[in-house]
Length: 365
Image (cartoon, rainbow, N blue to C red):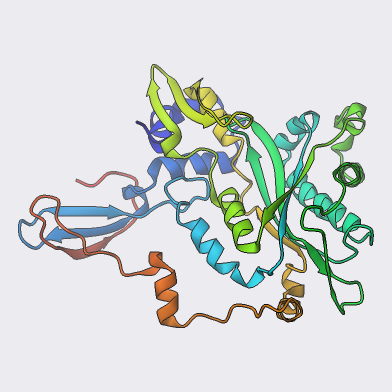
């Protein structure tokens, strides 16, 4: 079984040579980082066995957010930081998807289109939520961008995690929504489409789209997902999952990559085989622009309004979680426990730290 790093090491140079003129800086950086993750290029530490004197090199990870080796712990760490946002009410997951006709434009103008997607989706949801027939209040929203389908196809959409209710316009009471209904989906879809169209009209990109883009129905989905803790655990994988993880890659042979995926309609596991070039192309189209923020907070969860959360907890008869003591924090976060003692793979004796290794581009002797 191969890893993404090994595929990039083997086929990345030819891919970069072929598409040199059109390769984005963020794509170049990602290819380099993933190919050199946990190698001498990023530096590390040198250890030596106290008994047999065997030396061991332990290298640093690349910390690239598109690297499957570096993101596996991040989800749990994010969950722990979100506890202060939890409210003791049901939650909804609201998903806004860009239509197929807009995706080529989005792929070539990611920063602009993704920012517009976030802004207009949040505004559409909040506008409809102000209607007293549905919620009649200010919502809290956590938005997460997701760009791929199960076969690495380009499928940009944004998930919003939303509590079932919000703060009244006068700021004096919590107004609950129904546990199984937030807002009407068709109306939300059309408001979202109109706001996105109006926002795109202010840019030079608007004239590049066919008029039919504004006539079709845009896909919006609203799903009840249970209480706050369950909802956050549902959302966390969308935040820190990369386009493909190493365990999904089954084999690489004769210039082709085979990986598994699960069908969304039947749940059955299927295999997809692509040429290495097509595999890298599909992977790279999900690399985000440098510095792009893929998790955003709106309404009651925006930093400027989070001071209201303790009051909301009181109104809902559920005091917010108190800060953990150092001992409790240590128990709650296994990842922060001391690193286990490094043992020699030959004789099993403890290895002793010798020195730090500076980053360099060639392998150790």
